[in-house]
Image 1: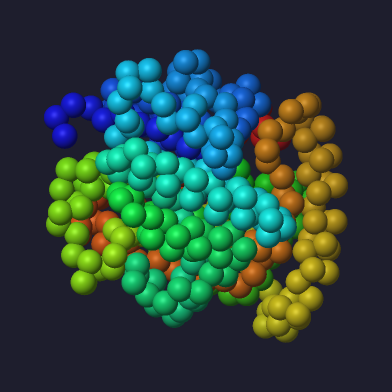
Image 2: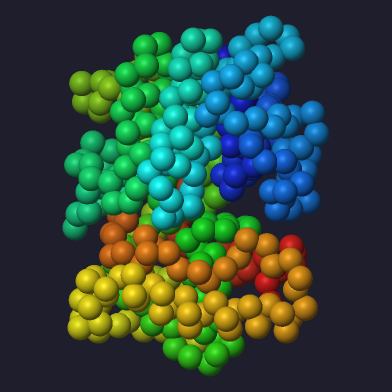
Length: 376
């Protein structure tokens, strides 16, 4: 491809979508970019650096799961079709009803996938999760056994399979480890706000299960670079060079750093960042937790939510953003997330610029919260 590709980002105001748009904007990678999301930029907690990349005439407000919106989403004034479509959309909250996940994950993916196939899009990148793999003692590779360990993962896997059956869809699937980085609002944000609350209460932060439970990570900077790399690879040479017999019908890539992050890794970093004691519950309490997860989650939230609110109020923060120590049951399950990312490096030639999570990178996350006046 000699000309810069045109790019459509579904769910472009979500965490990954906005950083992908920023990466493309800062590096002048595309001839045209369109950001599609259900919510308006003014309501998306966008930091100032995202405004040029995500707002203005680049933004279209639409629900991509609604087939009636697809013409407005995909039509371009020039009459041409989009080169790359990245599906960064979908429900990311845990503990939702199946009907919510079906509409906001499965139906959305199939709607935009079918439209992309109909219009001959050169590359359609579907974002999925490493939680689709069966928990195993070794790092999961792309063709290993699949056994989704959350509702989100189950619907993501169904979307992967259904998209693979759409005739003419130039599909690439990317399965992500725990994504962290500036302004992170999910897994790492929960851990950090819990640690800040423990710090204020002068109490030890204790983790369930063991230090060996793997919680593999990847920095948002490398996620966006990887997404762009796989789209370029596929559009230029990947489709012709992909060996279905050896690697499967659909090009699929794990995106995970090389740090083999575990709970022990995170506990060590958290202890250093917040100067607090960290440790792990014994086998008896962890075994109890397996059978009494709901009660345990309620107890943790009761212990932390009130103090967090007091810390925020005392700091004079009136809009603390999306940060909360609220712990969901899915985040406490002893689900090992351990992934092998070698295929991306070997097939696409990708290299990580932030190969492992560190104290310095976690401190950068906290600094980003402070810039938004979210952090007490």
